Length: 239
Image (cartoon, rainbow, N blue to C red; front, side, top):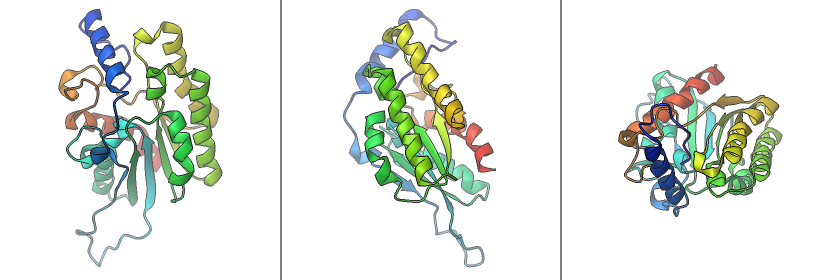
């Protein structure tokens, strides 16, 4: 995935190697056996007849391999499922749906958003744009595609609350491009009055122990931190 400069990097050479690996692996093929969009629904096994679950609200996580849980043994180790566990522990009546797709771009997301919105969505988490940046897609296109997705969600239901996950690029993409890319997310959040996760990979990117062997995709432990980063913003949206 896309990682920014981290304050605790040990050396410039380490950052360069890490970002080079990112550029190679983020363009890898889809692992459909592990990253197929999956509904992380609440278990009915522990539901008694005395406390039936009625018409739960829906949280839809719409993103790329970070959301899909690429490389994990079980999609339930990805952050959307961890959010479901947190929500269940608090007795909140929400069902989290994982609509992540490895290799997805903002253009790809735009092309499938109408199909995804056939189901009712109360909270929409948008996590896209990373692959655009690594491929050098014109920033105007990325911005326009993300705006189109936001517009589609609002048009479908003006009451849907949208959370935008911010991403950042490595410095080897060039200072002008990386700086403008970073501003896309807070600017869209401000323009559309969205809740913003400043950087989804905070405290995970660049830390070997929290990433898989490819050096990019979070491990199970890394996904737990992603879930914490999302929850920090989402908990206020749920209130």
